[in-house]
Structures are given as C-alpha cells and as structure tokens.
Length: 374
Image (cartoon, rainbow, N blue to C red; front, side, top):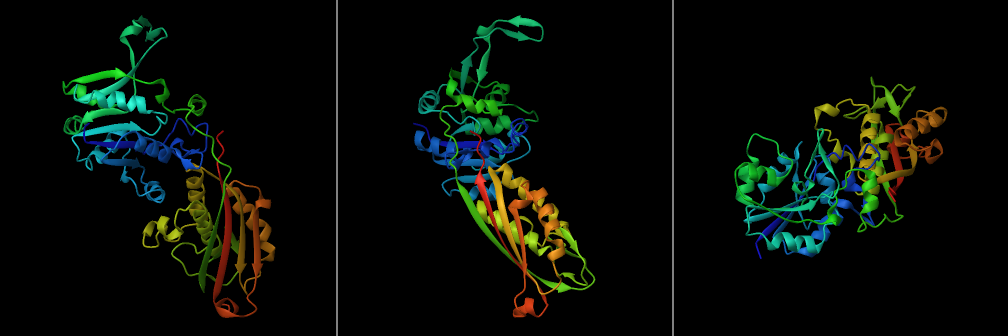
C-alpha cells in the first residue's frame, strides 16, 4: 500500500452554514468532541497514514492544538486552494489524500476503494451517478454523462503541487490535475460521504451522534493599579472617579477577569494570548470590543454561555449605584438575560493594596455548555 499523508481541510468560514446557525460546521459537537476532531479520529482508524495534517483558520489554529497533539496543524488561507498549497509544503510522501472535514461520514469501504486504485492515474476521484433529470441553463442534458465529484481525492503529491501553482482557482484537486493534461481515474463514490453545507444536511448523516449535555466552568482574576488622568470603566460602565486604571487597554479590570473566565471554561488560554499588550492596535481599546470578539469566538466553536458571577474588590469608588447597569451591559454582550450576570462589590477591610486604595482586583466565574444542534 502507498505511503500516504492525509490532509483534512477545516479552514473555511462556513458562510452558508452559519446563516442558519451560530456555530461553524467544523465546530459542531459530535458526542463530546468537535466535528473536525471526530473526522480526524475516524480517518485514523481507516489507514496507517504517515501524517495527518489539519488545516485551520488563523483564529482557530491555536485552540485546535489544545485538543490533540496527534496531528500537524497548518494555518490555511482565504481560498481552499491556498490552504491546500500551504499544507502540501508539509507533505513528504509520494501520495496525498485530501478531504474536507465537512464530509464527516466517509467510511472504510470508500477509503479502501480509493486507495486500491492509487496506481491507475495521477488522481483518483470518487464520483456519484445522477438519478434526476439534469438541466444546464435551459437545456436538458444526458444525466448519464453527469457525475457528482466527492472527496477524499488521492493524488500524486508532486503532480498536485504543480497543478495548484497555476494562476487559476480550482474547486477540487482533480480539476487542477486534469488542467495539466494528466490522467484522472474516476471510481465509485459513496452516498454516506455527503458534504455538510446547510443545517438540514446533518439530519441525513447517520454517523453523527448528538452532542452530550455538558457544562464547563472557568475562573478569571485580574488586578489593575489606579492612575490619574484616565477615565475609569468597570463592566463596560463609566464610573465617576478621580482615578482610572493603568493598562494597555481602557483598563476595565472586570471585563478582563470575565474574559479569562470564559476562555478558561472552553480551554482557550487567557486574554494575553488573544490580545497581547505588545500590539499597538489594542492600545486604549474599549474592553467591550474585546469581550464581544471573545463571545463571538466562543459561539463559533460550539458553545453557549450560561451565566457569569463577578466579584469586584475595591475600597473606592462606591459601586452600588452602577451594579444593575453593569449587569445589563454585560448581558447584552454575552447574549444572556441580566439575571444570569451577577455582579458583587466588596472591600478588603482596608487590607492589602486594595485596602490601601492603590487599585482594584476582580474575580470572575463563568459557565458554558455545548451547543445542542440536535
């Protein structure tokens, strides 16, 4: 059997899928793991690949790495072709099998069929016959001459690299290789390998288990020192105070702790990894903007926010008049009801730096759950 590398493409924006759904399709949960990982583990059982490469978006690649070190991760591009070209730089085997994560129910029979023909042409492609009448523009055409092309597709690595270096965008590997005048072998496809494009497609894929009812909790803690000549913001609300906070951003220490608790709940590191204070673009930024981006990310990778609980430790200023507004501002960003956002304020009985009125400390706890698509 051929030395073979597997490339799984998972860098797309899933633009058609997210029109009906808040979660990107590669991040819907199957049982207790996201779809991209489910597919990768499924392929692992089918063949002894020399390497499995997962192609991810720039925004998600570091998060993906937290799930498994069994695979190599490559940052994709704006187009499928660009993503594939980047992954091929890591391929050293003479053959490469390329599939889309959206084809989640590819089975052993299909993989065996494709690989068995590896020496028949420069590219082996699974196809399906068309049973319905086909109209092209206004004319009925012979449906026996029409095929539906699927992935995975197996190619000779050197030939595929050369084909993709042309200044033409191709929708699949076989089209690129065929444009060079090289041979393509068409083999029997499989209806189980239906591609997930829309939410309704999930109902037709029997290999996909519904997500488990799981909840995850994260904690966050942050501290900022007082500084003069700067406005104070806490929980997204401007506070009447003679001090602000020393920070690279607007210094909203409560939102920073909240962000860390949310990232902790999904295992995505901390605020400094996403928004490093070494980058000028975050200088003075409104922390509500940062929180909004984190919430969007959390939802896109398959979670719902359940609730949060925030404790602000401060001798000054007095925060009681602001607490309801704080809850409302945060609830609007988190997409939950204000009752699910609890904000507490306390002193430290004049102990420590907080007691000496040098700054404010905040702790936050957040709960998220896996989004139930079924």
